[in-house]
Image (cartoon, rainbow, N blue to C red):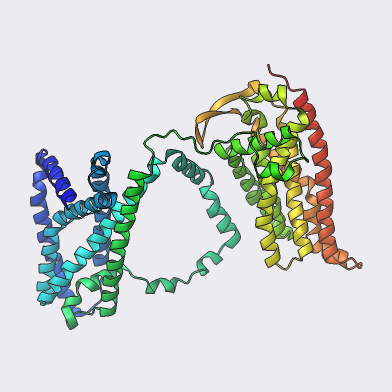
Length: 532
């Protein structure tokens, strides 16, 4: 209470220094008179006609509620920075300080709404002809205002917390900017008109609405108006539970900001040695050379810190959604096969794309300390470590739930892994032919530090050629899984399942042959790579 009173006095002194703000009291009085007249008219209409709450009344209620939320958020932002928590928390606990902030914001909102609320209560009561209506109107305004204040304070503190966590907040913002549109595209393409039928529109009629708040306000009118007491009491109960819930949320957020967020943006968390023993090393110890493991670990660590390869998966999604899916869906290629192909292609691109740019600063050291088989093998190993669990987690459950057999599901998972390995080997063979001098520092989404990339359309043309090439390599899987193909082959005595599984095996074999050839090309180009 003392914190709220002190902030009130400070805020009032700041208002007194600005003489135009003194006219706010006069404006509030005039607005109160106008609202009182409107409330009188609404109350008289409700009494005489017995109709339900009109759209104009609900619009006014919603606009007022949103205004209180925004005002509460602005007050929280202005006062939170001036609380001087480093000194304040030496005398009181964080929950006490947060509660004082809530009380201050509610008091300021109440001071602004007091005159209009009383005017509306008096006008509504006179229009209805029931003094009890004035009490219920005041209660409805108070409860709705407290609810709006809770939302405004908690929302502003949540924004403050995200803003302080600069690195993580920037990462999520960039991911949303880069990939946010894809969710809508995929939903529209896959579901189409069925999206609307997922939830019946009539189900929303039973949920609380602003009209229920109006019912609470006019509950005191009794039988004079067409007010549903059940909805009014439900609104009162819901608000009575929601207000302390939002206050508690704001308190937790404030405490998190004050007590757990570091004052400096410099962090050492997430730093790991390239040579320490991890799950990958324990699994492959004695089977894979240490340089290969080091390259794989380093590539995954770099990708985790600056998800550069993640950006390239947007191109994979565009290619699959706008090229592969429309083309192959026409001929009847199963969606699960396209999903396995897409995830395999994405996993390979994430790890294998732009190796010269990713290792730009460390490339001189790598060329003198790591051999070609270790460098290329490390990237293939990293792609496999990403692709195998990703494809298995996505494809296997869908395959089990679909009519496909266990053998076909297993073949699809192996097909996706083969696409992943083939994509990684091919992209390394292509990208290691890029001259290091062609790369320039450019800004990037996920970091403040510039990354090195090739300007112009060369990189896009190589990526498009990669997508087309890998698609052609594994095309036997698409052909063999077309219903018209395996049904026609079944007429000569070959089971349809055998045709589908055989086509997947043929595609895996073709991907293995191409991967081996690209692997050797990538090794040779790495060994012959020259720094200008």
